[in-house]
Amino acid sequence: MSKPAVEKVVLAYSGGLDTSIIVPWLIENYGCEVICFTADLGQGEELDGLEEKALASGASHLEVRDLREEFAEEYLFPMLRAGAVYERKYLLGTSVARPLTAKHQVEVAEKYGADAVSHGATGKGNDQVRFELTYMALDPRLKVIAPWREWDVRSREDAIEYAKAHNVPVTATKKTIYSRDRNLWHISHEGGPLEQTYVEPGEDMYMLSSSPHDAPDEPQYIEIEFESGTPKCLDGKSLSPAQFIEQLNEIGGKHGIGRADLVENRFVGMKSHGVYETPGGTILLQAHRDLESLVLDRATLQYKDTVALKYAELVYEGMWFTPLREALDAFVDSTQGPVTGTVRLKLYKGNIISAGVKSPFSLYREDFATFGQEDVYDQSDAVGFIRLSGLPLKVRALNDLPISGLEMPKPDYSRFKRD
Image (cartoon, rainbow, N blue to C red; front, side):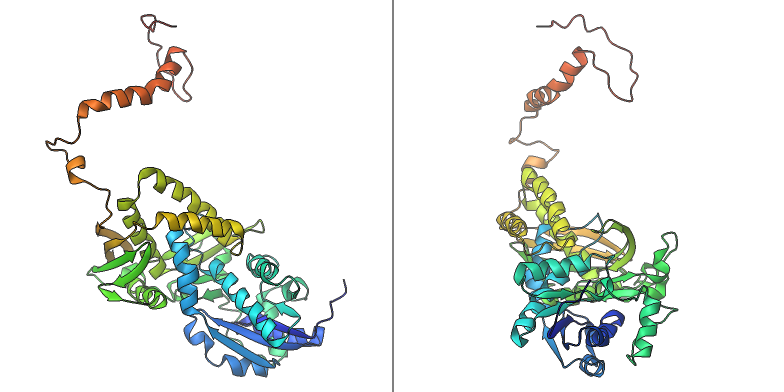
């Protein structure tokens, strides 16, 4: 298959192993100018020396954009409000970051007059889908170059050898060869020893969280205030969205909170094994759920749980810039008005323990719920409710229909009149 003619390409550049070797590979194979783009999503020290490294690899320019607040406010908090969790454990830290990165990559391509974009996602993973669906949604004119679907590099070991041959400095080694992705929300670990599912990850792998065994022996109480589903204050102090997450990461990590070991179903069809550390996100998710349980009625809460599953699926599959995601956001937003109040949590050795919740929109009434004497609820009213709820079961029994898994003696129903 012939390669498209490309004059200028914008590469989503992390400075990690894969994107480091992509720069010289693009120049050699496409003869094009390479502009690197890096989204600062909270990678911290990983951004140190990035420009020098990109230019030394052959790039003509590196543009870095600080997107931490945009990431937190317009991506992470909407996802939190939706309650999105993929396959029961994954809080979607990498998944939700890709559309934002690709969005700004498209903007950089427009700025420099580039005719192509490129990414370092493999042909086996989910990220290729997330990047390219965003390109397609925002500027389908751009050509897309995905080196992992073209080159002869077949493993991370091959990539290390390629880097050495082209004098590209990398930190990965053949001995400790985890593939990691870090941002404000989380850090993920894949590859290396994690390609086995029956091996416990070593403590030296973790970067954001302490082992629960080594966490403080005294619990820590925190209070989180929400306004219409959005976190606003931590222990009485108003914080920006990014600051909120940063502080909770530090607090939660100290107490060993937010670790998730998951064998997940990738969008491309295979299973993969990864470990995620999401201390702040895990705390926020529980706090938000605690508050919703106080202020949302049963029907709304149950349907919102259904929406959360679909929302998580859309994020995981790279469908952020779609009409359906926007429609789900509209539904979620309509539920979040009363999600205003304060949640108190106790953090202790990997556990988040609910320690109190209050809201001016609370649907909890002590006079309704009390087991003591009260005048607002006539307990005899429950008789009719139970009879109506059990009517289908009664008819089933009268028709002598079998109940799966039970071998019960058949009573004599002859005294019941059949119409």
